Length: 230
Image (cartoon, rainbow, N blue to C red; front, side, top):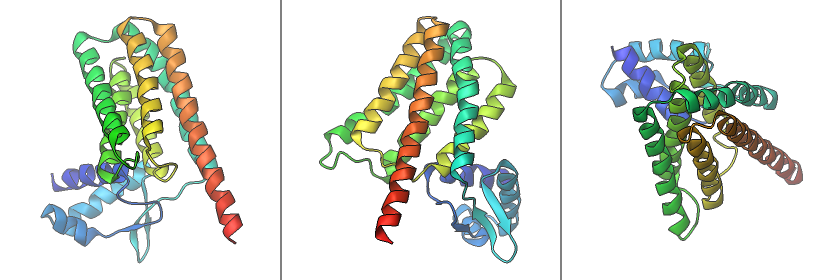
């Protein structure tokens, strides 16, 4: 349906960082972009509001949520509770087809990281960042999908997506961060491929903890800079 089309389109753009927290999303322009009316876009916004991506504000419409530091920590804690367990189960249950899909997601990230490493700036542009985030999200969701647990998959999809929306300003994707992320993913992938549940669990736990620490360091750095400017 047109509402589903608008929902998928807007959700993808939110995850890609096209809409910053606090920004307003206008129904009409989105509808024009998709060749549909504003009504299904409004319906899609209702779904996104239920998932916690946007707030529906009287007289303004949809506004991308701004969440607190504590809420962001809670999202990471939820991931840290679920995903190491999922990685261990994936090491026990993943099919050859699922292993191949996880490997391809990792290879896509490695290709993008290598491209940025060879660039003059050593910094990912908007397109590379969006593609890297998409492959990163895919890697994690494929691992959770390999558990065969659909309830876990639905819960994790929400927390993963929300982290990517609300942590879009946490850091720039430079070559070092991209390489470190790929190294973490490679360790997780190898443990799953080799059928080592305990190793996969520990590698995933370290990876998520490192992501939270990187985010918190960036938040604290930006807060310090704001105080210095004032």
